[in-house]
Length: 395
Image (spheres, rainbow, N blue to C red):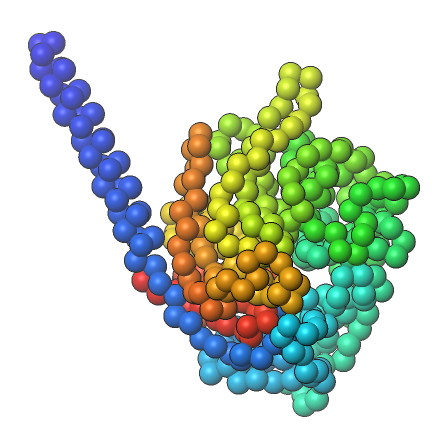
C-alpha cells in the first residue's frame, strides 16, 4: 500500500515538473518568436518624444511627434505647428516629450508638448479636422526635470504633470483641467523649502508611485522621495533623503523580487547602466536600497516604458539609446542606436532577458508601448534624432 502511494506521488511530482518545464519552454519559444516590423515615418529630426491617439476620429490610432501628426494607416504627415529645421549634432528641437489627451474635454485628442527643460510646456488644441495649425495654449511657464511625468496624480481619471519649477526652485504637480471647456492647470507645490534637491532645470530622474507601502503615492528622485499625503493637493510633502541610485530617466516602482517591498527600476540618461533597486526595511522602519545592474551594453537610455510585451502577465522593460543625447558628447554616443525589450521574470533573484527590436533608431525622452493596430499585441513608437519610427509586433 505504501509503495503504491509513493509511486503515485512520484508520478504526480514528475508530471508537475514536466508541465512546468513545458510551460517554461513554451514561454521562452513565445518570446523568441516575437519580431517587430519597422516602419519609418520620417528620418528627419523633429522631436525627442512621441505620443499616439485617434487625431481625426476615423477609428485608427495616429502618431504625434513635435510639429506633426502622422495619419494611420499610411502615415501621411500633417502639420500641427509651423515646422522648424533641426540639425543632428548641432542643436535641439523644441519638442522634448510628447503626450496626448483631450485637455479641454471637447471629445478630440490634443497634443501636450514639453519644450526644453525649464521652458514653458504647452498644449496644442485639435482643430477637429478643420484646416490650419492647432491653436497653442501655455500649460505652465517653467517645466523642469528631463523626465516630467504624465500621470494621474489625484485619481480623477485624467492625466496630470509632475515636474519642477526650475525658476522658483519648487517641486510641483499640475492638475489638468477638470471642468469641460476649461484650459486652466492648477498648481500644487510639493516642496519649496530652501536648498531642496531636484529643482534644477536639468534634473535627471523622476517617478510617481507608492515606495514606502503606506497606500499613498510618492514622488521619487534619485536623492530620495516626497511622501504622498492622503490628499495630493496638500502642499509641502515630507521629503525622505535616500540613495536611490544614479541620475536617471523615468523611475518605475513594483515588487520585483516578490518579498512584499516595493523596488524600482531606473536607467542612466547619459552614461551606461540599467538597474533594479531592491528595497530593504529595518525593524525601525528605516528604508534603504541595494542596487543591482540589469544591463550596461549601451548608453544614453534616456527613456523607459513598462509593458507586457510577450503576454506572460509580467511587465517587461522597453528602452533604447537616445541617439546623440548631447550631440555626440556622451559615452558610447557613436555606438549603434539600439532599441530593446527586456523580458522580466520575477523571483527571489529577478531576471531580464534582452531582446533586440532594432539597431538603427533608438529612443528619445519618452516612448510609447501600446497596441496601435488593434491586433492585441503591444507595439512601440519612438522619436529622436534618428526620426520617427513605428515597430509593429508580429508573432
